[in-house]
Length: 465
Image 1 (cartoon, one colour):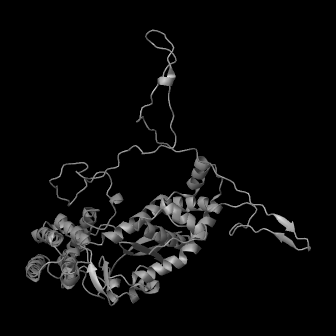
Image 2: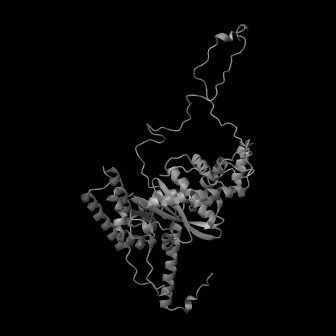
Image 3: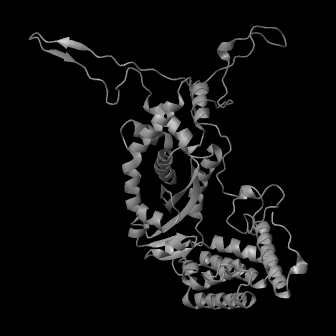
């Protein structure tokens, strides 16, 4: 901790400089305290229990609960039961004691159904070869099925189950082996689970490569990135998403070097939706910025400064989005769009008047580089400089208001890290990205994941197109 300066030894200029330094530090500390998941990119887990959740959702006219016409998920009877158990009445009448003639008894057409799981235990199939010798002396032997190479080995369904549990449901390795033992009576070591994951990674690698090539043909692709721990080092998971496909890749860097090496954006010619990370702008594509990020940043401006223009800008962006949703073809007419743009520029001008550019910084000791600007000024500059990208959703029906598609696709990998802490090796992180790309794409296409993984280990590959 720094020692307190002796104010009696300081000149008026030195005291003024000290006050400015302390004021600047106070501004930074207050900004840090004000930031939470509703007004920045901080995760909700960092909010703690004291902060009340703040939502921008407006209450609708519909009442709470399921709406009329909603199919619901209530437990329902099946048309044909697997088993029917008939329960007989007593042998004698409870009133007079006479013996009942059960031949005249009738059975209720509709009884009560109990839906349950059968006892699931592993099945062992032993393959034996038959041998025969021809009269000419030639010996003939049967062949083992393809893939049966060991004296004892796990089948495709068991491998599919452990890959599903660890890579999709994010069950830690030891808990996965315990689950397989408790539910199915299958004794496995963590090494066997790792081997199944490695086998799945090798099998899906060409499929993921093909998925990446297919994304290049999409008109709009959502891009995002998030930090991930590999051992003790920070790596970055990059995602590219559409409505029916997703590809994850891992790299040691976050910025341009990683995007160049992963080789999707350098070849992409459509609209790239992202959160405004500067590295994306080094590629020659059309850009569309995530307005969910802008709404959160404007919320922070309101919380930290109380400036009205920020509240008006939030309302304007939301109004634009509602107008696009209400339009017939998903775009606004030139007249309506021009009116919104004029209001957009007016609010940015108001913001500039309240947040002028800093031309000097008396507290700066390192004179190299530009003058550091406030968070609010930088937001205004971005909204002004990239106005076409911020408002592209008004003119292109293919472009959404937010980048929520990519953020949803990164939510489960973040949960994986939260549950397991980190990936122990770079190879393990690569395997997760490949398998998760395959599973995530199948999920978007409403495919049966267990069936698809079983086919994968059986040498058959379900279509992802």
